[in-house]
Amino acid sequence: MLHRQIEHRLHAAVRIVLPDADTESLLVRPCPDTKFGDYQSNALMSLAKARKLNPRQLATDVVAKLDVAEWCESVEIAGAGFLNFRLKCATVEQKLASAQRGEHLFFEKTTQPRTAVVDFSSPNVAKPMHVGHIRSTVLGDCLARTLRLLGHRVITDNHIGDWGTQFGKLLVGWKQYLDRAALQSDPIGEMERLYKTVNAACDADAAVLETARQELVKLQSGDVENLSIWHEMIALSQRQFDEIYGRLGVKFDHTLGESFYNPHLKSVVQELRDCGIARESEGAICIFTDGAVPPKDDPFLKQEDGEWHPHPALIQKSDGAANYMTTDLATLVHRMATWQPDEIIYVTDGRQQLHFRQLFATFRRWKPAATTRLAHVWFGSVLGEDGKPFKTRSGETVKLAGLLDEAEERAFKVVAEKNPELPVEKQREIARTIGLGAVKYADLLPNRQTDYIFSWDKMLALQGNTAPYLQYAYTRVQSIFRKAGVASGVVTEFRLAAPEEFALAKHLLNFGLSLEAVAAEHRPNYLCNYLSELAGHFARFYEACPVLKAADVERATRLGLCDLTARVLKQGLDTLGIEVSDQM
Ligand code: ARG
Image (cartoon, rainbow, N blue to C red; front, top):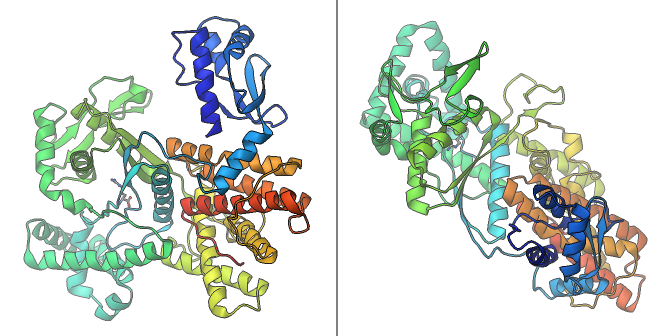
C-alpha cells in the first residue's frame, strides 16, 4: 500500500537525520483536507518535541533526505512541521490498473499473521437471544472476518451459557409444567415460560425454591435423569440459535459452552490458592488486590464515600459452587494451551466491564510470562425511539428472530413498491438482503461504546449512511455494466482527468487503511464510514462524469472506476457480514 511505502521512506530519512530515533510510530495517513495533499504525517512534530528540536528545522532536514519521487509530486512542509504528500497521477493510475488486473484490491495481507480467538455471541441456553446478543454476534463476526481478510489466523468460539443456577428452576418446570407440543413448535419460548412459572412459584413458596436447589444439586452430581433433560434443553436451544446464525450467515469454529470447563474448575481454584492469588474469606474463595497498581486502576478495589474498599472477585461460593469467573479462567487456560493465541477478543455488552477487568488482571498475576493480548470489546445498549432500553410494546425484551422477520417484512414493502414488475420470489430475496443488511449495519455504524437508538425508518432509508444506500450504489454499477453491454472486470488503461475521478480513485486506495484500523482498534464503524464515503465519492463522480456517453480511454477509465468501486463495496460489505444483490 502506498502510504506504507511512503512511511518506510520517511523512516529511512529520519534515521539518516537522527540515527537513534525509534521510527516505528511515525505514521503516514490520508490528509484530512485534500487541498493540502493526499497523505500527511504529523509525526515529526512529536519527535522534535521529545528531543527539544525546532520542528520545522527537523522537517526541512528530513525532507532533504526523503526520496519519494517515484510516487509523489511533491512533499510540502506545512504549519508547525506537518509533511504533506501529493501523489503523482501516474502512480494512482498504475494502482488502479494493477487492481483491475486482480493483483490486489487496495489492501495487503499481513506479513506477520497473528492468531486471534474471537469469543462472541454467547447466548444462554433456554433463553431467547435478545438485541444485545445480536450486537455481539454482528460485531464479533465482523472482527473475525476483518482479521481473516488481512491474513490472520482466526478461531471463533461461541461461549454458550449452558450451566448455572437457572437449571434448578428449569428442571422443576420441565418435570411439572412441560407442554410437549409447545416445546416442539417454539422450544426456547416454552423453556422461558417454564422458567418464569417456577421463578414466580419460588417467590411465593420457599418449598419450591428448595426443590429447585435440590434438582440443581442432583444435576451437578451427575443424576442420569436430570442430565438427560439438561442435554435436551441444550440441543433444543442450539437448534434455535443455529437457525438464527443461518439467517445471519454467521459460523463458529467451536461452540464450547461453559459446561465444557466443569472438569477443570476445581483445579483452577486450587492452583490460584496454591500460588497465593486466591484465599478464603467468609467460607468463599476470593481474589483480592495485590496492590500492584494505583487504586483507581485496580479492579479489586472500589470507591465508596471517598474511601477505597476491597472488591474481590469470587471464584468459589461458600457452598462450594464455582461461577462465571471460575469458568472464564478455565476457558482462558484451555484456549492458551490449545491455540496459543496472540490475542483473545471478547465481545459483550458494557455491563461486563468489571468482570473482564478482574479476569484479565487475575490472568496477568497467574501467568506473568504470557504475552497474549486480552481485549474486552464492549458495546452500549440498544435503545428504543423513546431513548429507553429497546422493548416491545408490551414491555418485553425484543427477541432476535422476530426482529429479523420484521426487518425482512419492512424491506419487502419497499422493494415490492419500487420493483412491482419483479417476481415475488426475487422481491423476497432482495428484501432479505436489504432487511438483514440494514439491521447489521445499524449495529456496526455507531461508535460501539455509545448507546444507539433503534429506528426502522433510519436504517432502511435509501439515502444517508445506511446499508441500503451502499447496496444501492453497488446495484447501480451493475446496471451500468448491463447497459454498457460489457462484462465488469475488463482490463483497461486508466487516464484520470476530472477531479471527481481523482477523488474517487484516491479514496479507493485507502480501503486497506480502514480494514487495518478496524483490526487494530476493534471498531467496525471505521469500515462503515469508509464505505459510506466511497459511495459518496461514487455518486459525485457518476453525477459529473458520464460513463456510457464517453468514448475511448475516458469511457474505459470510467468503467474501470465503476468496476473497482463495486468490488470494494462488495468486499467491504462482505467484511461487515452484509450481502449485496445485483438488483434493487
Ligand atoms: N453468556 C454471556 C451473556 O449472555 C456472555 C459470555 C461472554 N463470553 C465469556 N467468555 N464470558 O452475557
